[in-house]
Length: 201
Image (tube, rainbow, N blue to C red; front, side, top):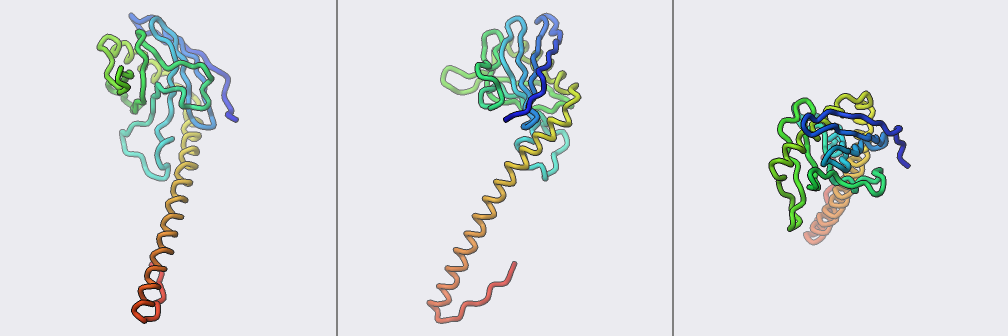
């Protein structure tokens, strides 16, 4: 069961592209935030997540490293309401995930799904439009008072993932150590030698 905040609504001016309406839904269990967007020639959802969600939180982040994911593939996130469509701009549906630094996003390169199933660059006019939309979303994200809570939730999710990963790795290493010790014992037996006691490394 996910514990959500009440849906918030915001607007941002996009200049020649009109007014962008945003319905914002945060999942404080995972740190994900769904932005449902509506503007002239713009409709659909986008999920934003702190990048710590994917990395070992005990490892220090590099200075200037990306700290935010923008995911157009909204339906892979369990908390997203059924029927939410991926973000579409000028009838071009975005796909994939962008990694950005919120301190200075720089140029964004969103992509669409090509006819052969591979990701490809957006047409130039749609790319410029998409950058205006995504820039407004990032600006709103940075201004949220709940950012520390969302980042802490993403960090807890990462901790659970990496703990399970390290537990599996340690179990494999222990199994490998037992297998190696058995091979050593049998080799000593073939040589007619007493097995030597193993010392801890």
